[in-house]
Length: 237
Image (cartoon, rainbow, N blue to C red):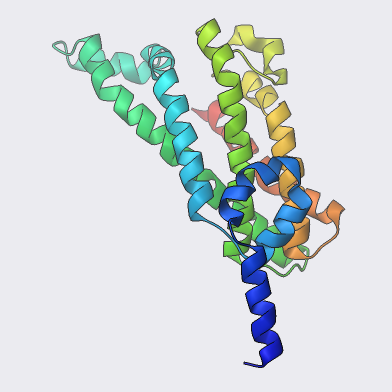
């Protein structure tokens, strides 16, 4: 390798030192410069651990509230009727670890799906230039931003004792319940959903090498498709 390339590689490595940890606040404070660095030096492990850690806190503290929702589901009632000796306390002891584990897994898998969708839109539709590791790194930090929003909302949820506390338009139809399709649809129009879409748009534009409008379109198509699937599944099930 020519000496100039060695010097450039060493310079990039030096400038990216501590990027994984710095990214946890720079994604809020200065996303443009952060994603420019991240495109050169993708980071996966630290944001994934950060997401899992915050989700652990969130789902541990809300597990009882989630169980109360599950108690009113037809599946819960069917299990109780099929097992007369099964008490509610035993069901709760069984369900809560699965609730916590399932919540953490779903939130860590979500950016993998978002990145796959963004890669399709970015490379194959908008003729961008990025690999999966690069856009996954962007999606993870954007998802971390959203999970921080969950933690910010947590005191309101615990104070109210139900999931209808929200920074979204879902509060307009909170009386219908959090499992109602209209509530789920309006809950997607929230402060942290919009913030995540905007920041993912910035990261997509930089990572794929496209203009800011195309980056925002990639973000909307990726996050929007996942949201649409969530709403449709609530209608079906």
